[in-house]
Amino acid sequence: SLQSPSGTYTLKTLLDELAHLRKSILDTTRTIRMLARTEAYTVNVSNLITIAGVSTVVAMILLTEIITVDRFQSLDHLACFVGLVPGESSSGDERTMTGMTERKNRYLRWVLTESAWVAIRNDESLALAFNTLSRRMPKNQAIVRIARKLLNRVHFVLKHQQPCIVLKAA
Image (cartoon, rainbow, N blue to C red):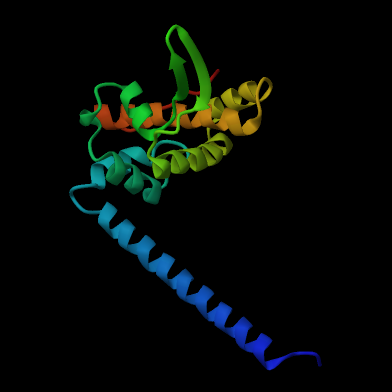
């Protein structure tokens, strides 16, 4: 056999590290889920998980990063905080749109974008919107628009303290 002792040792070390990381992720996820069941979070979490693509962990990330939706004057201000707005470069009378803004809460934007990929598999209206957008732009740009729609739902649920109800098309 062509196995070397150093290669075997390296593989064993990497597998041990993988096992440790998996246990750490499991412990962290359990802690987040326990925290979600506390009085401070339980109502908002149960309302947020009614949104397609939002799990308990995602709901807790949203709640701990946004803190309170009342600190934002409008949905646009929240979208700006998250970074789901177009960027702009202006000089005098000239305005140029630069794509997505660089000013953002990187973690929230990433979480909402990843949740949007899940949401389009579970929500007919978001899937239809994604397919329509995908005909005129690349899919990675279309999913950002879906993430903005998810943020709209998050804002509504937190503002009105009620579950998300999406009506099905007849």
